[in-house]
Image 1 (spheres, one colour):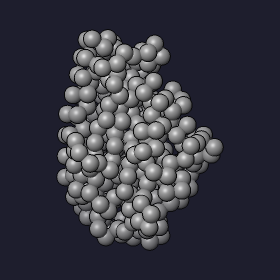
Image 2 (image 1 turned 180 degrees about the vertical axis):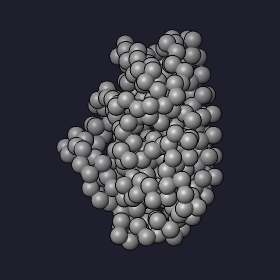
Image 3 (image 1 turned 30 degrees about the vertical axis):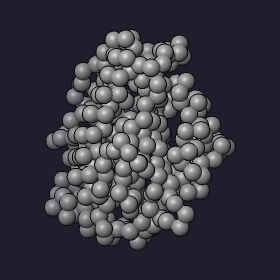
Image 4 (image 1 turned 180 degrees about the horizontal axis):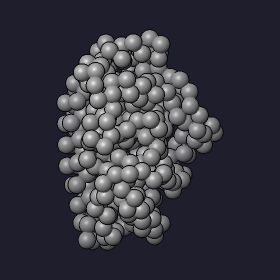
Length: 315
């Protein structure tokens, strides 16, 4: 999908944008029509007309994407081979470049080199829901994120867990009115975020599906905090796609690359969920031979070695 990451002083901001280019892939089940809150389960607060209109909009978006064979969930296969060289190059573009910068609270597409970023401390993920998100939706998201976090823990070899207690990676699933009022909550979770970036989240354009922010503690180079904001109005597959992408990008895979396939780190929206190729990217990122802060020149020879090992030098 069209993702990108913005680096601010001490803060990284990643976004998932709407819109797509046609790509070929197996058809998946179309999204069901949006249900009423009562059909989905009990919520503690009513939804606004604006939120309900967004539900209709994003349901049409998901149906359009799925109808084109996009948002694939198969993880890749014989139709999308890749080599060790391709894997290494994709990692360089995705982990060592940024796609967007923030200028006055506006996202501007601008590729620029960066350095390697990841977590050095254990990642404790916590889900938080807006009051108007129905309980059935919350339950489904908890189950999905629990499975995904367990997968990420296994793939990276880095301690990543889902918690109900103290956390350093917060995933907020919010409907429209809750997100527009989320500034104080995000500010409390993400120290150092600027007023312009709070406005960006509160005034999120309709074509931005979700965002994630990550930053480092003073004097530290690894990530120490992250906050992802997911629109609660998304239908199930689009919301799960956001959860997969934003949590993975919050681990340090910051950029997108049009050459990356099969991958969710691509603007073409072909794949909706983390692929086998993306698992290898995460393994490279958390290989201890790489160090936080490495530049492309420093990291490239090591990346190539690891990519060759992971693929046995083949596709």
